[in-house]
Image (cartoon, rainbow, N blue to C red; front, side):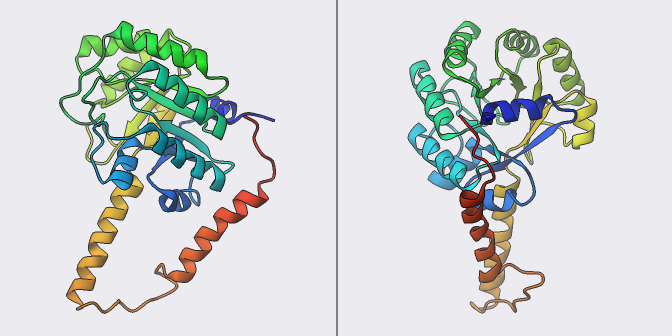
Amino acid sequence: MTSYGNRLREQIAAPGTTPLIGVYDMYSASVAADHYDGMFVSGFGFAASYYGLPDIGFIAWPDMVAFVERLRGAFPNQHLLVDIDDGYVDPEVACHVVERLERIGASGIILEDQKRPRRCGHADGKQVLPLDEYLAKLEMVLATRRDMVVVARTDATEEEDILLRAKSLAATDADVVLVDGVRSVEWIQRIREVLGDKPLLFNQIAGGKSPRLSLGELTDLGVDVAIYSTPCLFAAHQAMDSALSELKRADGRLPTFDAADGVGVAASTRLLERNIARHHDAPERVGV
């Protein structure tokens, strides 16, 4: 049987740009699974949904591992790329988390070079570890994983440092490189050039620093993977705000329900029942 890591690795190597959709809880993952074959377990989304806090380093690794375990149980055939931030500071902890995630069936992880206090990759004020310190942590993680995909991420913001770090990460055994917060198509091209044959990941987030690009445009730029960190989270925020504002205006009376256009108890139950079916009726369990 092919491992989850190797399945994702094969998908990344295939022609085109592989999209991975950011999910923040089991319900958003249930909706995403109806549209895409791969999920990105977003640190931004998880911090927001599980803690109600911004993505600045509050996530505890046992909470993230437990979430990924629930995801894998419900979605046995989805790619699951997991954001583990800086590996929760300590290299030994990072390796332990990688072992746990691989054992429960995560397809891959992203390990960043930020130092604390960390920031969202598209926020101002990011600081990075000394390159040799990050590379040592990365090498420990690479030595720990078996088949899991490892994405090496840099949050460097100075132009010279971005290219230096991208080239250094490309020289490791990491499967993919992510430079977060890329500000232009020109910089995607420059990063692509220094990476050589190493696969490139691009992160898109609404309101972020990077340009909005289609999968076709990203493919033309040589991008192998695209993660969409927050489309589910931000759409839910907007929809909930609109629905509750309308409920308040209507003095608490629910709007007229149209089963053809709206989501009610029946549609929601059908969505969740598919998670049971996937769990019990998966054609073949993937070895890890």
